[in-house]
Length: 396
Ligand SMILES: *Cc1c(COP(=O)(O)O)cnc(C)c1O
Image 1 (tube, rainbow, N blue to C red):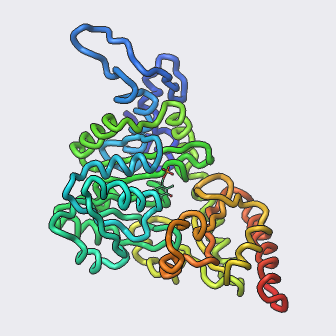
Image 2 (image 1 turned 180 degrees about the vertical axis):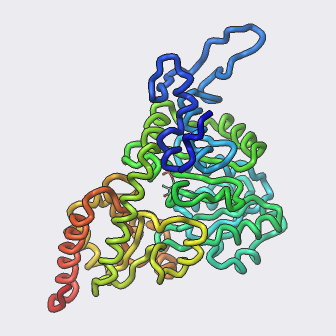
Image 3 (image 1 turned 135 degrees about the vertical axis):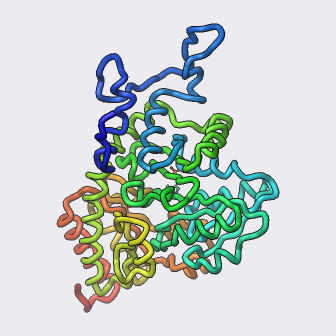
């Protein structure tokens, strides 16, 4: 085959070439195979597909695309990010222990604390920005170290290679949730990670229209074990959503690069505003994880958080802002403004939440594709409203 896929941007567009080049019609897009079952031409041997839970040609195309992008061997598509993450945790057994990043996504927190415990799978939450502390938390029965980097909502950075070293020394697997960076900016499998997980609901699909999850393994045998779990649990992605996700992936670099460019400009703008107490963005030199992030990733990404003085100023800002959608989720064409205190971290007691820096003034912005000058003008006017709410005599 011709080497058409040297760069990731090219791969994103031509990822499904294998499937489409073999099609009889010549259609440039993968067909949506809405079929639960498949004709078997021979009594003695079945074809590549028998039942869509076990395999579907549209889902297969997506699974090959993501495996290729993450440079892994096996890609698997699930009904949601949580379905992918849950399936990966089914690789451990009763009596095992898992080490989980303390900044982990709320759904993963719920899975480890509320469900895995019922199957006698124990866990410890640890600050993974601290490798020493992480190494100390490993137990003889630890089977998985679970990382998110950058982590929500303060964009804390974990040294992936440092974690892999600890995992290898202790004979356990490393899982990385790569939702925020995507394979465009970060490839954990190349750093020795065993399984990469995605909420493809976010940047990969990119249009706030699909809920989907992906998993990719570095090792083929581990991939087969995970595929067995996918087929057994049955939490597969349907063919229509698989198709939408394939389409979203094609424009990933155009979307994410543009959003990232805007995120940098917004970060610079926010840093100059006196009412903004702090800006969290992994592309900032002043960010505590900057040098590690620079080493393992090619970009700061399109997500940032910032802190206003208190709940009242934050409420005034949110009520005044025009363009960003005030909502949970991220990674879409439209900018999305989230309020961690009552959204992602609502279940956490206030003291615990504030101890982690998730105060009543913290906002997270997922930068979309609006004109950046419009976004900055919008943020500026909303900050002015917040300033008036806070101390009427100061101006920005
Ligand atoms: C959204 C998200 C998830 C969960 O994915 P769903 O598709 O909502 O199930 C997991 N990890 C991160 C970092 C997320 O942002």
